[in-house]
Length: 393
Image (cartoon, rainbow, N blue to C red; front, side, top):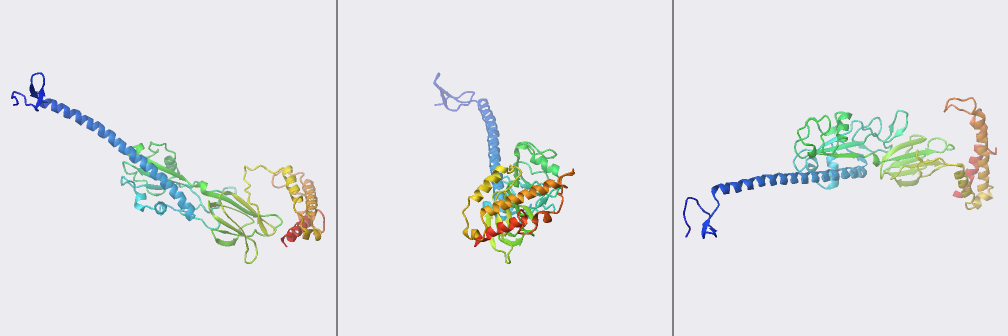
């Protein structure tokens, strides 16, 4: 039987006296207070862990968006603007467009384009769809250069909505775009008026300059007119716009090279993955080596090795019967180069301006002459063509 007294008990036994006693009301309130404090502390830790998990997930999601966007560019040979970026990503990832436009916190993502972006021709902006002439940006010196600043940003916030002055499209200024691009992880970009935390802002940077491949198509000096014809992604064939044509095409572009016959005859095709250069020589396309600025100049030793390999090539009996051999062409080349050097050396005096050093006499009268004049370009062309034509037969 429980005892009664001034304090209510919980029915717990006091082993010293044989009586049962319990927690007082004050003790219970104290315990509840401690439990409440611990709950608050644990809740803060739990919420922080949830935020970190959400942040990590969003970073991975934006990374996947970046890869999907790049894959979409290579597949479609185009770069969308703010009107199509979300559908391109959704299509390649197999998700709904709404899952691209908003994050798990139901906050809208923003797609920003660098205002300094220049792609295609005449200062072209996004969207960009690759045509047969590719991207031909011209600098102040008239050179064909790679696209300028093909950069975009995908912004996402895990707490507060992004600043109201940020809308998908071209950024308001080059400085505003650069401030976001250059901002450190976990910080708020310079110039922002925003109540969110830097840790809640996720920025995915995409620079697709590495997706563009340089292509050069030209002709040798002995070939009159423009080079042959070409096609891009099976569009064409079309005449090459100029005797020395350069452009930039997206990685994986299908190139086709054709001669100048009517209709053009297909000669060679390649999928572009690296910078390439081709030259139209005596009716056919040759060469697949890109001569970039980092490539060292050829030396006389390289020329001698090429000559030795040419002389050691298999004898063409048809050409030999016609009086044309590799040695015939070899001596014609030596004579031509000797005459050319003498011609240049005779005119390179009294000249002070680079690019204005014209040798005396006219090239055609001094070197081209007629096909029977040993040492002329016409003689060399005649022997070389005869050797090649005989081999072709």
